[in-house]
Image 1 (tube, rainbow, N blue to C red):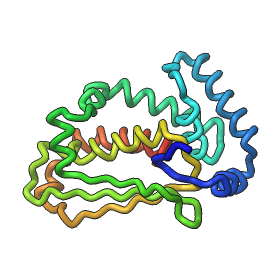
Image 2 (image 1 turned 180 degrees about the vertical axis):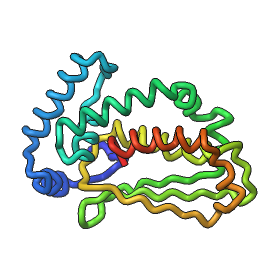
Image 3 (image 1 turned 90 degrees about the horizontal axis):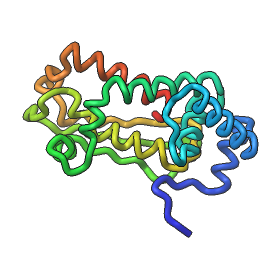
Image 4 (image 1 turned 180 degrees about the horizontal axis):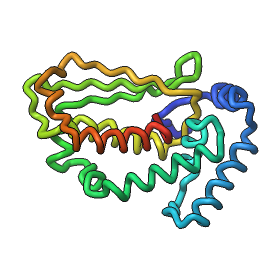
Amino acid sequence: MRARLLEFTEDEKWAVLKHEDCTEEELDELIERIKEWIIKTNLPVEENPSNKYRTALLNCKLSLERTKECLRGYYHIRTLYSDFFDKLVPNTNTYNLAKELVTVAILPKLTPDLCRTTCVRIDDPQGQAPDGLFYEVIPILHTELRIVTEDYFVSNIIVIDLEGFGLKNVIKYTPTVNNMLVHLMVSRSKICV
């Protein structure tokens, strides 16, 4: 058996589906409907999108309309801020600095109430980041990874450790950065977080 990045047992999978009052067949049918809708709306067609669509559906409590809205927003943001997403490449200067300043850990096991937990630690007491976006590079990369990984969950818990974050970091969040972050977080939170 292949190890999973995000673990869930068959019992947890069935409990999540039961919580959403859905069968695996019904979830697969919803995923197929999303695939058909993607083709009709000229959004990007991906090779193996089932995990992404499952994650979006679970975050949207299996609402087809909310899932469509969230996916539309996700692809819009990727286009609108393509220059930012082009920087999200491992082993670039942006990535390496961000990796020094921010640590993200997605706990592999679900909580007893079937939640996925993500821990984020910002450790930049000297204010090294050129702007507030640097603090989001690693979390967004982890979000992208979660989106394409098979997972079942009822909700998400995010724990943020700000011990290494102070006034020097807060001033990095200019109005331009904040506007972009609002767009990024709203689109991401609907699909994954």
